[in-house]
Length: 301
Image 1 (cartoon, rainbow, N blue to C red):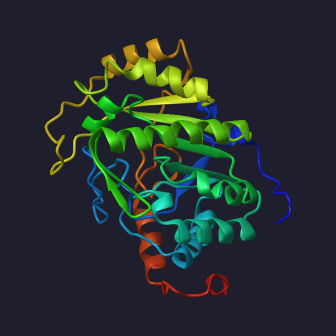
Image 2: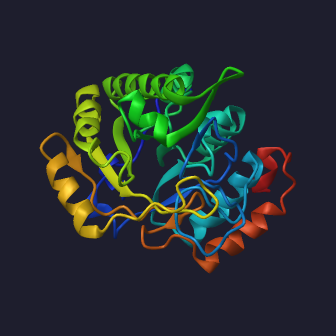
């Protein structure tokens, strides 16, 4: 593939505060499986009343995602970035992720391309992602000490083997920090998301901010946990805005802070304030009717 010309990297509304009301983003929900289990996460694919990561009103095949994107870009022409943010992890769904990226790139070569991931399994696909023109990468790093991570992650699955406790946390943390380092050194804009869990990692956040900054991340997003029914941490208290502000101020000593995060759904589209509009759901429903195994080029006929 020839070198890909992209639009201005500053036009990413999540990474650039000044772009948030000018440019939109789209998350293509093509990745339902996940290779880790966080104790605060429950992926309810059909829920339309929640605005948080891990939920979507539909899970699309790559062909359906291209059909959806083709319709959406005509309805919302100010979209500057295409991303994949679940509802699971992009690299627990590698074939679907790479096929979707490849197909979108062929039709929309100037679009910014963003991925959100837990970082466990992204490094084996470094070459493909660089070739496809990855511009922005978000890796969620909620701990850099295994004893803290063991309280956050129920298990990690890697190459057919299950890991638990501190062993699972250590494996994940090592992979995350290495991915931050490798991709940032390649010129990718890397953001680290941190899920703030009171009583678990709230006294650990500055250390995480320092570590990801040293690894090469350029922006840090401290996200208050959204307690979810049916999870081990369902009863955890959501942090107050004032507490989040104080933590961001402390972390700003080490790395630039993101302050306008909307905790977007896996099917978010449009401006950051537009997370799950009726228009988007209608287009998702139409795309869901496209045969899942339809050749991608047929979606454009």
